[in-house]
Structure formats: C-alpha cells, structure tokens
Image 1 (cartoon, helix red, strand yellow):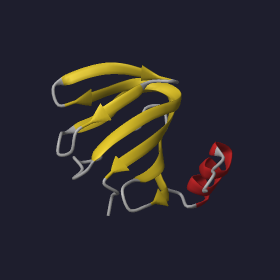
Image 2 (tube, rainbow, N blue to C red):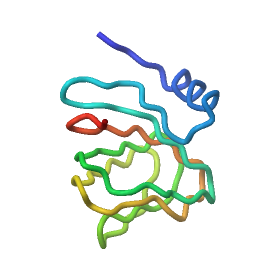
Image 3 (cartoon, rainbow, N blue to C red):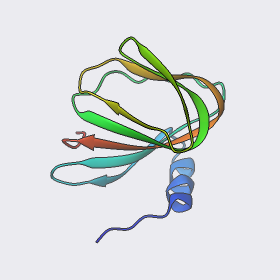
Length: 105
C-alpha cells in the first residue's frame, strides 16, 4: 500500500518550487498534485494519456477542447488523451489531484 497526505505533498511541491509534483508512478497509472495560484497562467500542452482532475481546493475555469466549465473544490473533470485543455480565470489558488492512465512518462 502507498498512502499520501495532501499537506505533505503540498509541502514537497512547494520546496521543489514547481507547479506539479508527481507522487505516484505505477504500471497502469500515475498521479500528481498540480498547483496554480490565483491569476496564474496554465501553460500545459495536450498529454498522450487520458487524465482525470479532482479539484482539492480553489476556484477557476477549465476549457477542454471547445467546452468550458467552472471548477471548485470537489469538481472532477475528465480530459481525453490528445485534447487541448487549460485552467484559466483562477480566482482562488487551485490545488488539483491529477491521475494519468496509462502513466505519464
């Protein structure tokens, strides 16, 4: 079993001074914590894997392909592999759990 505490992941991400911390990489999936502060610009590109975002905290919008929706704590968004997507209009610091399948390289 592998178990993680969000506050420890957030601390590790902050120490490494990055927006993304991959904390799990297994044969069929990987997971990470993605952080975007209020007003930040999300510069990610489409991924080769399907992914699921679970918003742990914060508030903003996400556009996936041509569809846009608002997200906040508890939101879950599926993004198919290869589809353009980005968070924007981030009004409260976003902390997002990201699950990739198959695992990101």
